[in-house]
Image 1: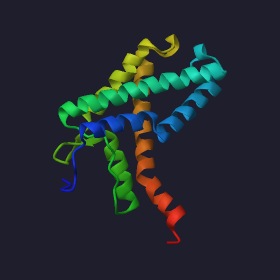
Image 2 (image 1 turned 180 degrees about the vertical axis):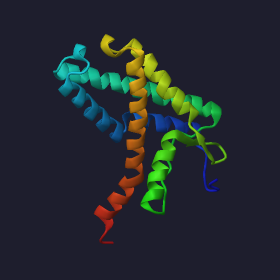
Image 3 (image 1 turned 45 degrees about the vertical axis):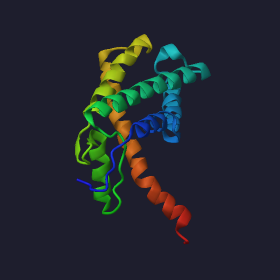
Image 4 (image 1 turned 120 degrees about the vertical axis):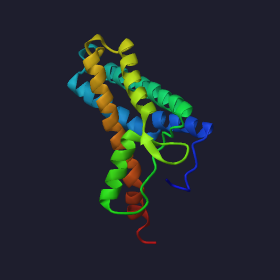
Length: 177
Protein backbone atom coordinates (compact mmCIF):
# COMPACT_ATOMS: atom_id res chain seq x y z
CA UNK A 1 0.00 0.00 0.00
CA UNK A 2 1.25 3.48 -0.93
CA UNK A 3 0.99 5.86 2.03
CA UNK A 4 1.26 8.90 -0.29
CA UNK A 5 -1.81 7.86 -2.34
CA UNK A 6 -4.69 10.35 -2.40
CA UNK A 7 -8.04 8.95 -3.56
CA UNK A 8 -9.59 10.42 -6.67
CA UNK A 9 -12.15 13.17 -6.02
CA UNK A 10 -15.48 13.51 -7.86
CA UNK A 11 -13.93 16.36 -9.86
CA UNK A 12 -10.93 14.16 -10.57
CA UNK A 13 -13.25 11.49 -11.94
CA UNK A 14 -14.89 14.03 -14.25
CA UNK A 15 -11.47 15.22 -15.45
CA UNK A 16 -10.42 11.59 -16.04
CA UNK A 17 -13.55 10.99 -18.16
CA UNK A 18 -12.85 14.10 -20.27
CA UNK A 19 -9.13 13.43 -20.76
CA UNK A 20 -9.57 9.72 -21.49
CA UNK A 21 -12.38 10.47 -23.96
CA UNK A 22 -11.19 13.57 -25.82
CA UNK A 23 -7.57 13.99 -24.71
CA UNK A 24 -4.77 13.94 -27.26
CA UNK A 25 -3.87 10.21 -26.97
CA UNK A 26 -7.51 9.14 -27.30
CA UNK A 27 -8.14 11.41 -30.27
CA UNK A 28 -5.00 10.16 -32.03
CA UNK A 29 -6.00 6.56 -31.28
CA UNK A 30 -9.40 7.25 -32.80
CA UNK A 31 -7.86 8.72 -35.96
CA UNK A 32 -5.58 5.70 -36.27
CA UNK A 33 -8.43 3.24 -35.68
CA UNK A 34 -10.77 4.99 -38.14
CA UNK A 35 -8.02 5.18 -40.77
CA UNK A 36 -7.33 1.44 -40.52
CA UNK A 37 -11.04 0.65 -40.65
CA UNK A 38 -11.47 2.88 -43.69
CA UNK A 39 -8.44 1.42 -45.42
CA UNK A 40 -9.75 -2.10 -44.85
CA UNK A 41 -13.35 -0.95 -45.47
CA UNK A 42 -14.53 -2.60 -42.27
CA UNK A 43 -17.42 -2.54 -41.70
CA UNK A 44 -18.38 -2.42 -45.37
CA UNK A 45 -21.63 -0.57 -44.59
CA UNK A 46 -19.60 2.57 -43.77
CA UNK A 47 -17.72 2.64 -47.09
CA UNK A 48 -14.10 3.40 -48.02
CA UNK A 49 -14.46 7.21 -48.13
CA UNK A 50 -14.32 10.27 -45.86
CA UNK A 51 -17.92 9.74 -44.77
CA UNK A 52 -17.03 6.20 -43.72
CA UNK A 53 -13.97 7.48 -41.88
CA UNK A 54 -16.14 9.96 -39.96
CA UNK A 55 -18.71 7.26 -39.17
CA UNK A 56 -15.99 4.92 -37.82
CA UNK A 57 -14.44 7.72 -35.79
CA UNK A 58 -17.79 8.67 -34.30
CA UNK A 59 -18.74 5.09 -33.45
CA UNK A 60 -15.42 4.58 -31.65
CA UNK A 61 -15.79 7.90 -29.79
CA UNK A 62 -19.28 7.06 -28.55
CA UNK A 63 -18.09 3.64 -27.37
CA UNK A 64 -15.08 5.11 -25.55
CA UNK A 65 -17.20 7.81 -23.93
CA UNK A 66 -19.80 5.28 -22.78
CA UNK A 67 -17.12 2.99 -21.37
CA UNK A 68 -15.33 5.82 -19.53
CA UNK A 69 -18.53 7.12 -17.94
CA UNK A 70 -19.45 3.58 -16.86
CA UNK A 71 -15.99 2.86 -15.42
CA UNK A 72 -15.83 6.13 -13.49
CA UNK A 73 -19.42 5.86 -12.25
CA UNK A 74 -19.34 2.23 -11.14
CA UNK A 75 -15.83 2.75 -9.81
CA UNK A 76 -17.07 5.63 -7.64
CA UNK A 77 -19.59 3.34 -6.00
CA UNK A 78 -17.01 0.62 -5.35
CA UNK A 79 -14.09 2.90 -4.51
CA UNK A 80 -12.03 2.08 -7.60
CA UNK A 81 -9.70 4.75 -8.95
CA UNK A 82 -9.50 4.64 -12.78
CA UNK A 83 -6.30 6.71 -13.00
CA UNK A 84 -2.95 5.27 -14.04
CA UNK A 85 -0.02 5.55 -11.61
CA UNK A 86 3.51 5.46 -13.01
CA UNK A 87 6.33 3.38 -11.58
CA UNK A 88 8.79 6.09 -10.60
CA UNK A 89 11.90 3.98 -10.28
CA UNK A 90 13.22 0.57 -11.01
CA UNK A 91 14.09 -1.68 -13.88
CA UNK A 92 12.40 -1.99 -17.24
CA UNK A 93 10.77 -5.14 -15.87
CA UNK A 94 9.17 -3.18 -13.01
CA UNK A 95 7.81 -0.62 -15.48
CA UNK A 96 6.44 -3.40 -17.71
CA UNK A 97 4.87 -5.20 -14.74
CA UNK A 98 3.21 -1.93 -13.67
CA UNK A 99 1.77 -1.41 -17.15
CA UNK A 100 0.27 -4.90 -17.30
CA UNK A 101 -0.91 -4.92 -13.69
CA UNK A 102 -2.78 -1.62 -14.04
CA UNK A 103 -4.46 -2.82 -17.21
CA UNK A 104 -6.40 -5.28 -15.05
CA UNK A 105 -6.24 -3.73 -11.57
CA UNK A 106 -7.21 -0.40 -10.03
CA UNK A 107 -6.44 1.33 -6.76
CA UNK A 108 -8.94 1.21 -3.94
CA UNK A 109 -9.68 4.02 -1.48
CA UNK A 110 -6.95 2.73 0.85
CA UNK A 111 -4.35 2.82 -1.96
CA UNK A 112 -4.08 -0.94 -2.46
CA UNK A 113 -4.57 -2.56 -5.87
CA UNK A 114 -7.30 -5.08 -6.64
CA UNK A 115 -9.12 -6.30 -9.76
CA UNK A 116 -10.63 -3.42 -11.76
CA UNK A 117 -14.18 -4.77 -11.70
CA UNK A 118 -15.68 -1.46 -12.86
CA UNK A 119 -13.39 -1.56 -15.91
CA UNK A 120 -14.39 -5.16 -16.68
CA UNK A 121 -18.07 -4.22 -16.52
CA UNK A 122 -17.57 -0.98 -18.48
CA UNK A 123 -15.59 -2.58 -21.32
CA UNK A 124 -18.03 -5.47 -21.61
CA UNK A 125 -21.21 -3.48 -21.08
CA UNK A 126 -20.30 -0.62 -23.41
CA UNK A 127 -19.30 -2.97 -26.22
CA UNK A 128 -22.52 -4.97 -26.02
CA UNK A 129 -24.54 -1.75 -25.69
CA UNK A 130 -22.79 -0.31 -28.75
CA UNK A 131 -24.23 -3.19 -30.80
CA UNK A 132 -27.43 -1.11 -30.85
CA UNK A 133 -25.80 1.66 -32.92
CA UNK A 134 -23.19 -0.28 -34.91
CA UNK A 135 -23.43 -1.55 -38.47
CA UNK A 136 -25.32 -4.84 -38.65
CA UNK A 137 -22.24 -6.78 -39.79
CA UNK A 138 -20.48 -6.12 -36.47
CA UNK A 139 -23.42 -5.84 -34.08
CA UNK A 140 -23.21 -9.33 -32.62
CA UNK A 141 -21.75 -11.20 -29.66
CA UNK A 142 -18.51 -12.28 -31.33
CA UNK A 143 -17.69 -8.74 -32.48
CA UNK A 144 -18.60 -7.32 -29.06
CA UNK A 145 -16.27 -9.81 -27.36
CA UNK A 146 -13.52 -8.95 -29.84
CA UNK A 147 -13.99 -5.24 -29.01
CA UNK A 148 -13.72 -6.04 -25.28
CA UNK A 149 -10.33 -7.62 -25.93
CA UNK A 150 -9.31 -4.67 -28.09
CA UNK A 151 -10.34 -2.36 -25.24
CA UNK A 152 -7.93 -4.08 -22.87
CA UNK A 153 -5.24 -3.96 -25.55
CA UNK A 154 -5.84 -0.24 -26.00
CA UNK A 155 -5.68 0.23 -22.22
CA UNK A 156 -2.28 -1.48 -22.17
CA UNK A 157 -1.06 0.79 -24.98
CA UNK A 158 -2.37 3.83 -23.11
CA UNK A 159 -0.62 2.67 -19.93
CA UNK A 160 2.62 2.18 -21.88
CA UNK A 161 2.38 5.73 -23.20
CA UNK A 162 1.68 7.11 -19.71
CA UNK A 163 4.56 5.09 -18.24
CA UNK A 164 7.27 5.91 -20.75
CA UNK A 165 6.41 9.23 -22.43
CA UNK A 166 7.54 11.33 -19.43
CA UNK A 167 10.89 9.50 -19.44
CA UNK A 168 11.30 9.92 -23.20
CA UNK A 169 10.24 13.57 -23.03
CA UNK A 170 12.72 14.25 -20.24
CA UNK A 171 15.54 12.58 -22.18
CA UNK A 172 14.77 14.33 -25.47
CA UNK A 173 14.03 17.83 -24.22
CA UNK A 174 15.91 18.22 -20.93
CA UNK A 175 19.01 16.09 -21.30
CA UNK A 176 21.28 19.15 -21.47
CA UNK A 177 20.22 20.55 -18.10
